[in-house]
Structures are given as C-alpha cells and as structure tokens.
Image 1 (cartoon, rainbow, N blue to C red):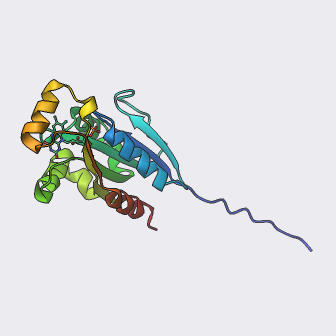
Image 2: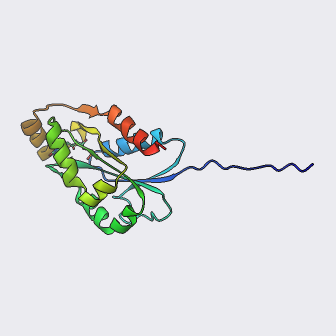
Image 3: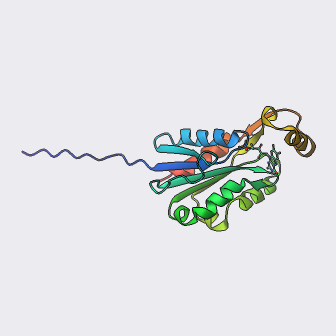
Length: 173
Ligand SMILES: Cc1cc2nc3c(=O)[nH]c(=O)nc-3n(C[C@H](O)[C@H](O)[C@H](O)COP(=O)(O)O)c2cc1C
C-alpha cells in the first residue's frame, strides 16, 4: 500500500502598509491594522525613511496618510502617481487619519486624498479618526488647532471600529 502525504500549504497574503505621518498617529493606525492582519505577513514602510519602497513582491498594498489643512501629505500624492500602474495591479486598501467633526467633510477629505481610479480599485477604504497631540505640535500648529478645532489639550479619537471594519473587508474571502 502506498501512502501519499499531501502537504497543503496555508496561503498567506503578503501585505505592505505604506504611510506618512506627522505626529505619529497614522503610524499607530498602520500598526493596529498590521495587528488585525496578524495571520498574514505584513511589512510597514514609512515614506519618510524610504520614498521608493520595492513593492513588486506584495499582493496587497495599504496606503495611509493624514489630513493637515484639508490635504493629505504631498508624499502620498506623489507615491500614488509614481506607483499608479503597480497599485492598479494589486489588492488595495486606502485610509486617512483626520479630525474634522463633520462626516461630510471627512468624506471629501478622503476623496481629495486619493485619485478616483485608486479609490474605485480599492477593496477597503477607511476614515480612521485621529489625534491632536499637543506635545508634538509646534507653536503655529497649536495656535491653528486651538483656533479652528477649539481644542486646548491632547485628544485621541482613533476609530477602532473603522480599523476593524477596514481589516475585515481586506481579509474577507
Ligand atoms: C495643524 C493641523 C491641521 C490639521 N488640519 C486638519 C484638517 O484640515 N482636517 C482634518 O480632518 N484634520 C486635520 N488635522 C487633524 C490631523 O489629521 C490629525 O491630527 C491626525 O491624527 C494627524 O495624524 P499624523 O500624526 O499621522 O500626521 C489637523 C491637525 C493639525 C495639527
């Protein structure tokens, strides 16, 4: 009698999370997403350290940035332009961190952050809330936040529900 042993390898998707952050909140959110995708291989790339990461070997790419004075970081916009063809060839997740209290404005900020063709191609989109970290702000940032957002001290409003929903949408079979 011949016994055949079948090895069925578990397939894990390789994911890259590419982000920019000013005071560290988007990095925190990127790490929370990586934790949620814990059965998969996830690598994080801060565009400040490496503006041209090698991403050809990944099946899924997640891009995250934060909104400052209505706009996502320029580095994220440049990344989306430069990697357009590659991104359209991968499974994609897009997210922003932001603190505007108005849901309609947060949606507009998301739409302004990423090109329409990437938004349409994406499997998951997330608006993850954010933080005002006074201890990391410079004088002008503090002034702007006090005047416009009417906040006087550090607040953390990271939306863990949105992070969960985003990660589940990516992992759904
Ligand atoms: C000076 C300043 C301007 C900001 N402008 C906006 C804004 O226009 N819209 C918004 O939704 N959030 C705004 N935010 C909130 C940021 O998006 C929030 O602080 C976010 O968590 C920053 O993430 P980061 O630390 O990864 O850069 C602003 C924050 C600061 C400090």
